[in-house]
Image (cartoon, rainbow, N blue to C red; front, side):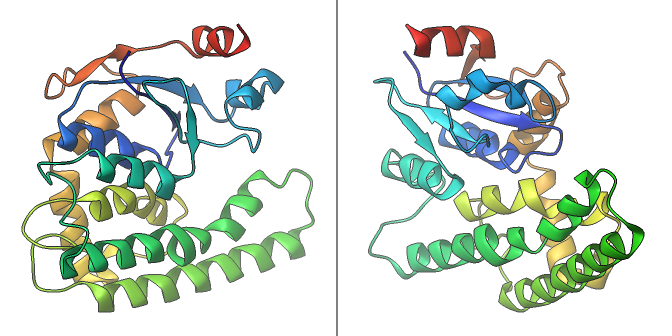
Length: 234
């Protein structure tokens, strides 16, 4: 059985990992999960007790959660270095550094904005504080990432890697929350345009939107969440 990546919609950060599997080029399956609905079912805790995506079910049936852990799993199975680098190379060090930044401070900066969006019945003053705090944090983290981007086409060199995959699922939250014009960060804006134009990313976005997409041919189909949960129960 191929590995199965459980990815979330709408606007899940896990979209980038779908693109990473495409870039890797090895057979994989997907399980598309509504994060605002079916993920909240108590049965989902059999996959991830923290009620989050992404989740990876390996060929042996083991469960791997957390973006960085799944990215490391992919990296370890990339002998042709399609999405990674020699582990002892400076390029690998830079890739891990950028991935760490994006997955922690950059992604975490959006937390107050998500809390404000989901805060039913919160008083206007609390919502205003959350939105102001989130906006300030997101802008500051974008400033730092803009400084980190070099002159190469992608985050680490001339081809997309796991660093670009980790970024692409999160970066679009800037527009969703209406924080600022992406053009405020010209290097990041140009980088995002290149990543989002990649066939693997267009494939991942189409699947996230519930559209059909064959991709490179590595995708062996989708598995329904109910079937996946039944398999775990058995």
